Length: 294
Image (cartoon, rainbow, N blue to C red; front, side, top):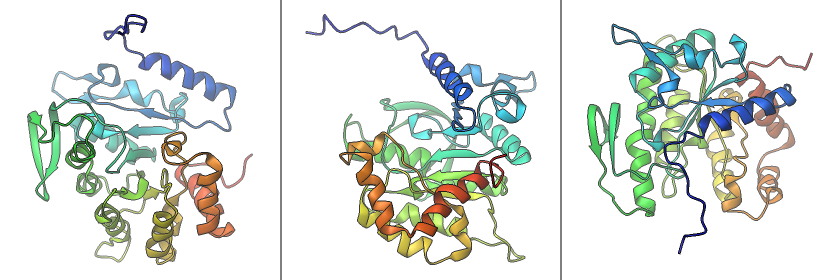
């Protein structure tokens, strides 16, 4: 029985408690902790709506360090149940592009997802190799609660790189990290898609999305990391400045025994100079930090 298990109050929102703990941590270590605020367009505290139907996102922008708050940028995890093209988020992208605020977005075929089989979606979903604009309840096909295919379907519908390309076509100078380099458990499709976006140039020969980054967080398999290095990173020298190291601690411990195994993979795949680039130089640029601590 579950008689001894504490009963959780489902009406209680624990997010403010987590936010307060992160703020306290950032205040204790202001030079070391640079948190990203988790935005969800379904969370009423993230915005207010004007009489004309437009969104006022002051509730989240005031949390940014550039406005006297504690957060360096925003984090999106759309497989949790919302479209990245939600109109409230489009307003956020506009602000972030104007103020050079970095965004990290989970873009992978694995990870966390909502348990819901039906969701009310505002924005676009990806299906059958195209985007569909919806403003209604969307029902998913795979109902098996713990199936890998179910997680993949949620990720594909709400997180396919084509959705992020739509956003970057609207806000081409947006500074955004499409995390995990689009890692899929069975193919390189998303990785190749993100790579093509990173390489894309406009009619004048300039990079179409100059602030599009990716990271190698939670890539615990050495062979996959080796492929990412040799097939992509090492090929285009001009794009090496847009790769970021990431640990995704503690999620990678699902696959490895400890962090030393994870770090050893990077040591064996990247040269010391390359690792300094992805773990020090590039993150400083992405996070809008000076070249040296003042």
